[in-house]
Amino acid sequence: MSDGFVGSGDPAYEAKVLMISVAARMAGMHPQTLRQYDRLGLVQAGRAAGGGRRYSVRDVVLLREVQRLSQDEGVNLAGVKRIIGLERLVEQAQQRVARLEAELDAAYRRIAELETLASGFSRGDLVPTSRTSTALVVWRPRRTGPT
Image (cartoon, rainbow, N blue to C red; front, side, top):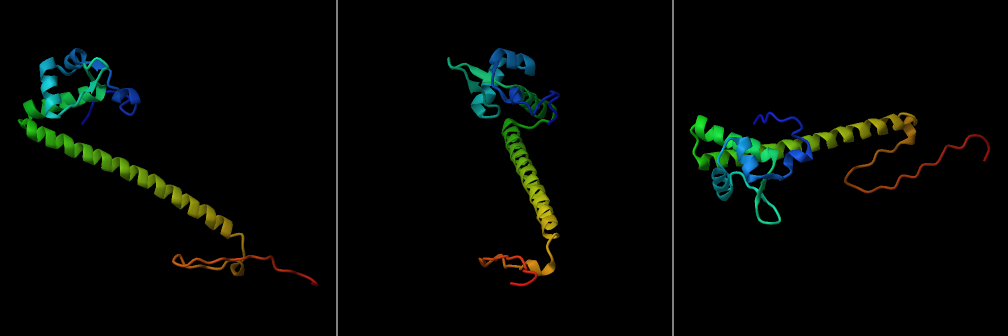
């Protein structure tokens, strides 16, 4: 979904601060349509202290997408709800993949650091251990000269 808004990673993009009348105007819809979409679970509004609905810029983008899918593509509201749910799942999966890739990159960097450190030792100084067993390796410098 292309939102056309700069800063979609910004927390303000997610902030539910727009009154229903403002969000409806931004989305090109009647406020009653927003209420119906909220009841159907398509675009869920936040609530102000007084109980009034509040929308975010992200919600407005989603409202436009609901309108596009239903009017331009002919998808019924149940189908739109399913599409939105699947898009959320994909977004969550992409975020998880990005986190895991970052962790993997960090692990590779750490391995490279350890390999660099290990290259300073002679071959006999390091003792390989199995990952499945616990071992204690004591290293003592070789004594040179008389003892």
